[in-house]
Image 1 (tube, rainbow, N blue to C red):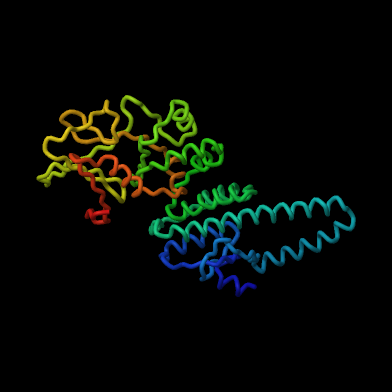
Image 2 (tube, helix red, strand yellow; image 1 turned 120 degrees about the horizontal axis):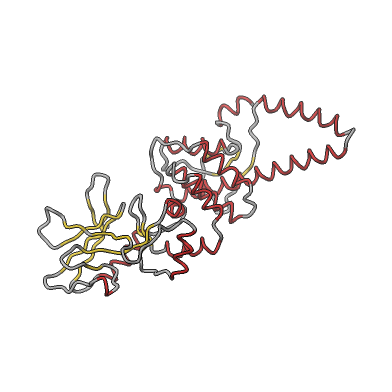
Length: 334
């Protein structure tokens, strides 16, 4: 058994899995995290919809010896005290249920990583032991498929970008009630990415009570209706045309106006508006650290959202185009 452990990196949960598309850094990050949580062996293969997993215990020789010694002690004491035997068996059963919950959570994480491999950040960062300790605690209590999927997505998001979930953010995720989570997810359907500062478009306006609920839940930043948060479209210094650009993380929006175009003002409540003699702007809600972390575990079509905005803004006098930003700063049509 000692030799087997050396070959499987201490992994004890076998899942049908493929490392295709993942760098060596991401592979290492994933295996380290899963090994910490109870050992998961990721074998080559295609992950199936049913998430077929086979649980195996990966025990070192020292652990085996300890279990054998404990078994001998248990047999001796159980003969004298049936209550002692019952307490030990209940404890073992409880521990196994917790590990089963952790393993199921990890299986969801593997599936999420596989389904969204392109989103993985290829950096040298590691998933911290502090995060894994907290995650393990939450995963042990994940007794439903919904909870296992939630914490599995959290684990996958942290593997993609270590540092996404602080202790505070984990606590917010744990304590958030289902109706609040559903409300937040509903407005995230309008989210546009600003790299580290995702915004939520005012296309889905919130009532005062809804806004207060999300601010109190610490997923939306406190919002001042008089000022709000503004995305400003800037004029290119080298550009000769009347075009304005807003860089939104990996994507961006270009707005151009025909000569004599009537520009919408803030009071008109448009998607994109103008202050007199100023650049185009868009009002938005801003998420907190916890809100951004939650968005990291959602499937959000940022480009699709921008395309819908562009279709609304487009008119005979307004030309709206989308672009993708390459790492070197080059813009290409999206």
